[in-house]
Amino acid sequence: MPEGRERDRYARASLREQAGDALKSLRGSPGLVVVMALVLGGLVLLTLWTPDAVKVGNVQAGDCLYIHAGDADTDSPTGRPAGSSSSAVAALYAQGAEKAPCDGSHSHEVVLQTIFPDPAGTAYPGQDVLRERNQEACEAAFDEHVGRPADGSSLELVVAVPGEKAWENGARAAPCLVGDPKGQFLLKPAKGSGL
Image (cartoon, rainbow, N blue to C red; front, side, top):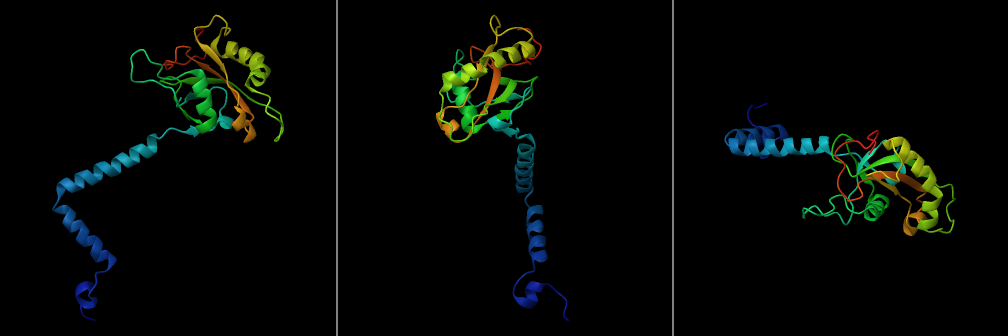
C-alpha cells in the first residue's frame, strides 16, 4: 500500500489529517490561540460560577437568595436595588431565585418554608387570607432567626404567598423571608444579627 497523505490517495483528508492541519494553522496565529483560550476559559468559569437556581417550592429555612425583582433600581443612588417586597415575591413565584452566600450580597433570607395543605382545584382564597394563615408562624420564625421580633426590627418580615395564577398552577409553598425594608441588599447574614 502506498504511503503518504490520505488526501493524496483518496482526494479527501482523514479527520486526523484535518485536525493536524488545523493545529498547524493555529501555530502560525498565536493571537487566535490566545483569543480561543480566553473564550474557552471564560465559558468554563461561567459554568463553574453560575449560581444555583431554586424554585419557590424548593427553598429551605436558612437559604440566602438573590431574587430578581421586577422593580429593582440599581441605576440611581437612592433606588431600591433589591426592589420592593411585593415585586420580589411575584418574581420568586414566577421565576424562582438564585442561591447566594449569606456572608455576601443577597436580597432575602428564608426563615421558614411552609406548604399550604389545600388540594389542587381548591378555590383561591386570596393573598390576604393566605398571609393571615402564615403570619404567626412567620413572626415566630423571624424572631428565632434574627434574634428579635419583627415588630421593632430594622429588618422586614416578608410573608410570601402565591398569587392567584401560581395557586391555580398548584403552588402551595409559602416561604417567610427577611429583607431590607428600604430595598437594599443584605451584606451580611440577618441570622443571629439581633437587628
